[in-house]
Length: 339
Ligand code: SAM
Ligand code: SF4
Image (cartoon, rainbow, N blue to C red; front, side):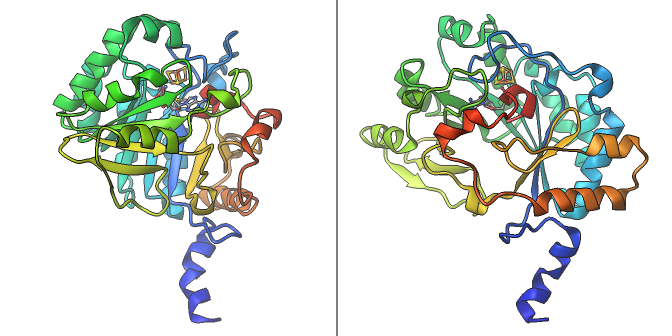
């Protein structure tokens, strides 16, 4: 065996290096497909049939699968959904996952509703980083986009998160042409003197979300717009990072761009996803799924689950299809997958 093959051997033995040499270290766990908002870009207008509770992973099942993944080499886990805060056992799940030896980062993506009461307890439970989704700074527009009048609750959640010491608090804004692209500069101004990182996300297609190519605002266009008013200085990030990040010279806040549509980052992908009903997805945009829940419930031991995970990782595709083709692939809605 050559020296380089030997160097790769431990990861290969653990099964998280795929046939393109990508080493997977980041797992996103969806805790539920339920949500208290109805964002049109995420959920079909008629809603989805919520997964029956007995089909969702229990707290013990989530923690057991997380521990198997961490044993295989995952060192970062993000809790997501649906809306993770609708799970009453979230604090308990967070503290048990945060305590897994080998895990470095426990993150969460949330719409922020009820964070005014829970940001501090989640931090105490071991949550290190927090991303809150907010697509507009206008109450009336928030109602149009989410179909719920919860703007004040989200803003209170953001303030509570800053007060609880998460720094930065990341803000996910899905930029949609003709919907909220007139607020790009307002978000940057908002971050001027607070530790917020505004992450501009390119609008992605999912079944039933009425995506259209003209609605995508390419990250390069946003960057050019910002550079007419601010100086952007690139921040060095991990090679597998989802966002391109920039400091704003003279600002406390920063910006990031999630460029999945116009500059996809499949070649350095290190991410795996576990849906709330226990399916492993190796790509956000690919419909292939493997049920780890069924294996667990059939009595599989950790070794057998590792083998199943390794098999799925071995099948991962080199890259996702072009954006125009993605809606035809029979994928699930974003709210069901977990972002
Ligand atoms: N409910 C939580 C929230 O809204 O943050 C977590 C789940 S949500 C599916 C995760 C992230 O996916 C959010 O930041 C949301 O804005 C983003 N998202 C949903 N649909 C999207 C789409 N079609 N294109 C781009 N981002 C999307
Ligand atoms: Fe719910 Fe988040 Fe989807 Fe909005 S983006 S509908 S808050 S899961």
